[in-house]
Image 1: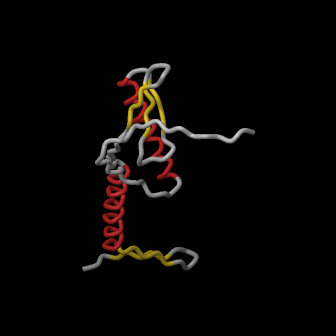
Image 2: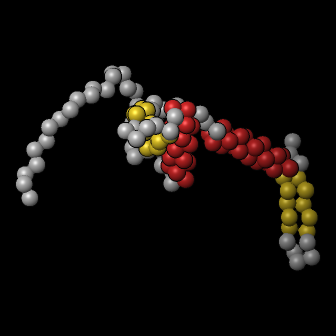
Image 3: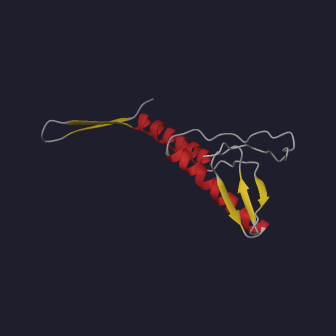
Length: 122
């Protein structure tokens, strides 16, 4: 059963409210807002590398987020800086309408090796 109210204004306009439809719209809007909040507050996990810096402290990179790098004087500070840098990176992607990438599955230990490169004389 639908409940409607209409009112005629002096200029001949007719205003019609369908309260059942208005209620359905309101409920839908509340649900959509809740879903957006849930997406906005999603938790992400990323693998990061802490590389000791020559001058002390650590340089932090994240293979899943190209170009993201930060540093900290201690491991604790580097960890906090990494969380802040990742958050800023993801917020930037979201703002630009880009997809947030998943973490890269790193199953093997990185290989460390020294390479020699020849450069032609100038």
